[in-house]
Image 1: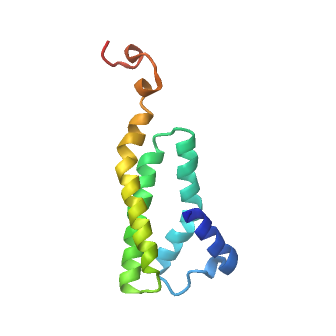
Image 2 (image 1 turned 30 degrees about the vertical axis):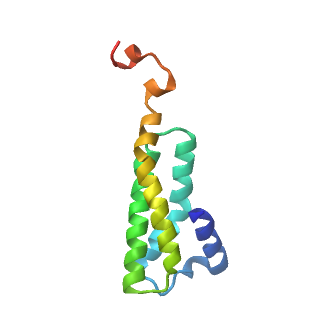
Length: 117
C-alpha cells in the first residue's frame, strides 16, 4: 500500500509532490518508492535482511510522519494511526519472520548447521 501511495503521488505531482514539507522528509518519502518493494522482494526471496530493513523503515517512517504531522501539519491523522498499527504488526512479527529463515526451520539437518544432535 505504501508503495502504491508514493507511486501515485509521484505520478500525479512529479518530484515536487511533497513541496512544503522539509527536504529530508521529502527525500525519505520518495525513497520509500524503492525501499518498500525492496523489502517485499527480499521477503519473497526469504532473505533475512528483509526483517531488520522492514523494521527500520517502519520505525523511521512512523517517526518522520509523526514529527512532520506535529510540527508542520498537512498529514491525515488517520493515516498515521493506520501506519502505526501496521508498524506494530511489523514489530510483532519480526522475530517470527527472522526465525522462519533459520536453516533448521526449513527441515535441514541440524548437525549440518552446527545445532544439537
